[in-house]
Image (cartoon, rainbow, N blue to C red; front, side):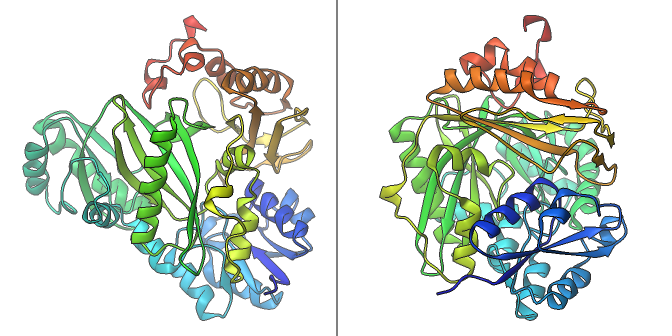
Length: 450
């Protein structure tokens, strides 16, 4: 079965460049879309063809479904890869592609819809016997219902948006008074961010690691997992550093995580690439958290320790081909760490747009830089501040840390502020080096000890 002749990438930045490269290696032509302020971006230069889809405002360009579908039709693109963010988890977009007889390179609309409804996904997993954090059986529709559920679960609890992601619509509450204050605020934030004000409640577990499992599924229903990633270094629920494998992973824990992930994907009749996310507590109890129905920002971490190109697998599966490997063929080698380099003030984490006057990425064995940045490129204020992903691979975690330390020191970006100094402090922090951290690492970040 042949692959596609031409694929349109409905995204920008480093992920668009990443997809273009995978397509070219597969002999597939690419079409880039761009807003009028993005015409000098690297993904526009690298694609075989590029088409402007509107002005800078997201609703008129990268979130403009009719414009993107029209661009695909005009350029005779057979498929669309959405990358991550933007329309990647929009079931209406996936349906619009299908209605236009354009292949959507990703999960099915139903996968996206179910995975995006955190409360519904949680309910499905609970029915299938996958451990979930104690919480409400479904959305809590009123403040009174939330108070009753919280009393039953026991404080502290966490309010979560049913359609949530990226930490929006989430509030940790310690008592009834806080819940009464935060309930409507979380509702409004969820409505503003996702167009859906539904909230559900879970028991808040303070000392946890955020561990996710990469899965891939094809049309025949075959599902494989590519191991776990630790994403516990976060700021306001936004991941900043990811690594694989989980530092405290054992063959038994990995087996359990993999089995739960495959069981979860099977319950959803999942197709293509995705991530099943879990909480692992200090006693190594595992709890299902959510499903991410797209390629993840941190997918290179898994690629580096397995040697498997996840983007290429996505494309092959969307073309109707089976997964190109069996579960028993997956091998995990060494340790990998990824730092997300953002165009932000490293002290205050506020955006730092502007022209990059010098951009010299690090190199050497086991160093990978996924980026769309270059010297002379303007970091625009309209979009996400991620400008590069610095990924290193070593024989073990100690070697990976040493290599990341060296790579961060070599990475030169001038003209704007970046989070490189922040990452240098984390990588050198004794608690990071020892692995003694959880999702609250940055809450207690002691720069004086660095």
